[in-house]
Length: 291
Image 1 (cartoon, one colour):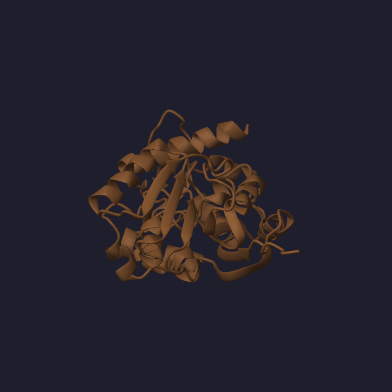
Image 2 (spheres, rainbow, N blue to C red; image 1 turned 90 degrees about the vertical axis):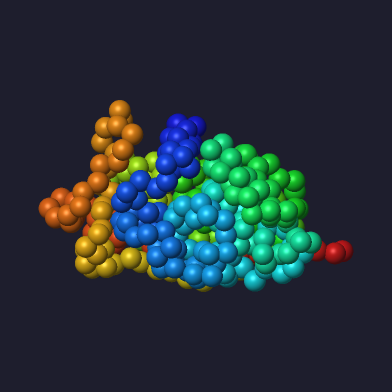
């Protein structure tokens, strides 16, 4: 079952790597079809951030800007879980400098290829991308000063395992900075089941459960730094809005989208928006105790 979920997500993101984000799908809850830069600025990036990275690095897949809140220092090592085309890796690389290192992990070969091409064309020497699952990181113990992720862990069928791996990869005293989508209340299973594999709705869990899982694997100082909800009124008032309803035909490679918010579609969108929030969470791995 878990491998089926990973396969479905991998295939969904492979299509995004090749063709871009399907119309109507944005990971900050699947509703607004704004241009990538406008959406990026809405979730916390600056225009300077987005213009400083290679063209094609921003696929409009995030729900926050973990780099902005991470207080990175020159010379640090960063591991990015679900690095996609490399947006957050390239921003982090500028913070840690030539003496630092950024390692992006993604399970989709097409994303890794895209990210590596982006790194080569802009001559990033302190960034590398590794193919692997975030539940089984291809990273040695005690490697990172910071582990970050942007709207990816919600897609994993084994979130506790992801947190365990992040904990293992961090140095004692290291930090975690994660932007993600969580549930404020349960969404009907029919909506979850019908959503696109890359949609935040599919695997999101309750906010309290998310924070509890972090604490249970050993993280300390677990704190929500930002929490945002997109309003139904914002989406409904956008004349260009298209809404992800479902992926009803397995044979079809295109998502079913609608251009008018009405009837059943309106109800579905309202339920999703009222039930979900994007959060940015910080946590730390306890320092090594010297006896």
